Length: 78
Image (cartoon, one colour):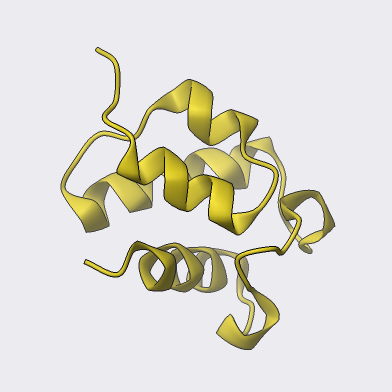
């Protein structure tokens, strides 16, 4: 699965952005509409899209799109 494409697609869909506006090095704090509520929405959608749990701590510590991809690839601690 191409996790980067999934992450970009989910963020773009939920925040009503063009996928072209997002790249691996895109800083999340600079993305229009990115806040704690939308971050949780993205987390839930990513878990649905990937059919696997995402580590909450790694996800919330993400500073850019690439960090979210790493959080998805890292097995969640339960």
